[in-house]
Amino acid sequence: MAKGVWIVAEQRDGAFRKISFELASTARRLADQLGEEVCAVLCGAGIEGIAGQLGKYGVDRVFVADNPALEPYTTDAHAAAVAKVVKENDPAILLLGASTQGKDLSGRLVGKLATGLATDCTDVKIVDGKLLAIRPMYAGKCFGEIAIASFPQMASLRPNVFAAIENPKAGTVVKFDPALDPGQLKTKVVEVQKDTSGKVDLTEANVIVSGGRGMKGPEGYAILEELAVVLHATVGASRAAVDAGWRPQSDQVGQTGKVVSPNLYIACGVSGAIQHLAGMSSSKFIVAINKDPEAPIFTKADYGVVDDLFKVIPEFTKECKKLLA
Amino acid sequence: MNIVACVKQVPDTEAQIKVKPDGSGIEEGGIKWVMNPYDEFGVEEALRLKEKNGGEVTIVSVGPARAMETIRTALAMGADKGIHICDPAFDGADAYGTAEALAAAIKGIPHDVIFCGQRAIDDDSAQVGAVLAELLGIPQVTVVTKLEFTAGAVKAIRPIEGAQLLIESPLPCLITAQKGLNEPRYASLPGIMKAKKKPVDVKDAAALGVKPAVRAKVVRFVPPPARAAGKIICADNTPEGKAAELAKRLREEAKVI
Image (tube, rainbow over all chains, first blue to last red; front, side, top):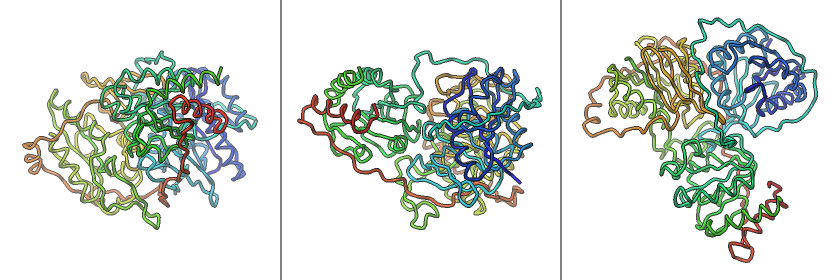
């Protein structure tokens, strides 16, 4: 019988992504309710040494595949390795991150394991001994409660939503052979072009300063960039601003852009079209600055400022600088 | 080149989504149905590939009778033929069930490249492309913003957190399209007229030899959690005063900076 709560840990260049600890802590909570153990799968090359770190966040055992073919991540190699160890151990629940890598991998695993997956969950719990996953659908215009009838019951967790809580357990390393067949490794990563700007990705940012049509043009974003430096924030944009060519596609927040959940989301000159609200309403705290008091964004905002953003934001930046000095 | 593009009919991004009182689904009345925007990028890329290299573009969709409009839209854009997988047995299908039906339909036709959207904007599952690739035994490159095809292979740009990957895959291969890949064309009037005569094969589960089973089931739909009404910061009614009070409240009251 399927047993245990498993996670697929994510590392890049030998360092864990924060989502790995969020997964470990969440798995611990579910496993304690079930009275079962937490296991992690960790794949890569030269990563055996970091495996133990997962123990700090509640992992009992870490199944490690250390193999040059597992670095950098490719769907083919990682899906084969994870599917093998999962099939051999038959966990009840398998959690992954809803990061770019986790989404790519989890879909492929659904195919290999012929099971069900709830993507990008914002809550998971145990009801009657089974997983119940809660996730936004229609980009957050409604939520679905998902039950999975097959094993492992899979869910991917939205980054930045679940707390990483220290809860030391053994974190015992168990090495396994991924038994990769070179003939099955079809894709390869030819080049990794790193973003050297040091900008934190919107999906991982703690603070987002976002600009919409009210920024009036690409040059308007200069004041948001300045504020972002002070708040260690990432600058985002509405669809209107991206479609106008003011900001790159990768900055777009909304139903056809990125779905974000920072601690603080500051919407500047964003009217709050439903497709934008859908992408940011899981933010923990929302501020709206807009001169139109009727703008729908104010219905989602915890604090609203009705005024000319070009006057308010530079002052706000100065005040924040003072407070944070 | 034989190119397949999978499409799904979804509510328009501007649609208000209301949950039925019993939580069994969403109210469909008044919804404007469109082609999933990410699938549009896939269809456009398929058409560009055909225009460059010759070949044929087949549109495949799983959906109720109304999904035929979306298939016709893709045909009007320039695709050659369609397969409409239409059977009430697929209502509420999960990613595996949908991919199984798509795989059964696509197995029977030649395919060098398959395009899907990186996710559908209704269920936001972002799984079908990857499951389909697995069931067909072909590689996948997901969430792609740029493509370059060479003989028997493709190079794709895939943005990830803080980097862009250049990935190479042999063909056949499944690509899931992300915004930025291209600017989809509008169907022309002659295109719309021609589309009416293009062949669309309608198939049910029995014809495909699949038995849909729902593994991941939405047991209840619920409205999003309501947010309490916020505070409008007035201070002394000057931009400076509002800015100062906002900063102070964020620091002391909300404790988020």
